[in-house]
Image 1 (cartoon, helix red, strand yellow):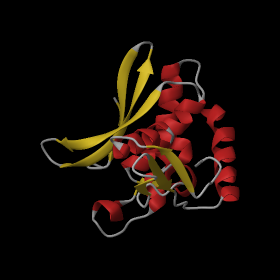
Image 2 (spheres, one colour):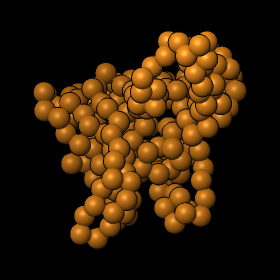
Image 3 (cartoon, helix red, strand yellow):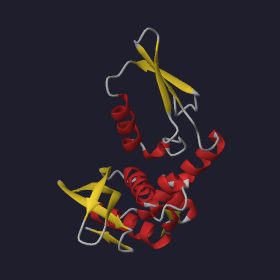
Image 4 (tube, rainbow, N blue to C red):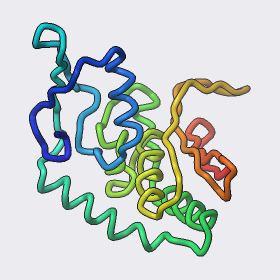
Amino acid sequence: AARRFSSCAVIDKVENLKAVINAVKNDNPHLFYINWYTLLYKVEFQGYKTIIYFDYIMGRKDAIAYYKKAVEFAPSLRGSTDYESIKNVHDYIASCTKYDRKVVDNNGFRTNDHNMIGPLFEGLAVCEGIARAAQFLLKELHVECTYQSGYVKDENTSGYHAWNLVNIDGSIKKIGYYAFGGSNSLV
């Protein structure tokens, strides 16, 4: 339904709908045009069906244009190995994306900071958008990549953070984009 830009979707009742929605969001960076923060849902039809109402941050034409540009660009980052592709994606995003300090300092919220549009087309994002952009590009390059998020704490800072896990020759590695210290790293 979201790929067709429908206003809503009707699904069977799901016990933990919020977890299902998060799984769909986290596995599908190409659904960047949905405003996941204003998604509404309610149980209807005598409690057997759930209606999910979508809120889109852009129209279908703009979303398709962004998607096509990103898909066409992704092959330019392909390396001769998965590791080289991962490094190319990491280095590209790290070189062209500035971390949006306004969000960290609680002085603003930009939806595109949290999806692939911010880092790939505007050069501004937070860790969530950076991780989603990396996930999108790596999936296009056929590299196994997942989006991860959680609360992190180290000696100097703590807060919510997002990163990627990638599969390099059967070994799971973390790609980290660290804004707290102002640096990016490929771990």
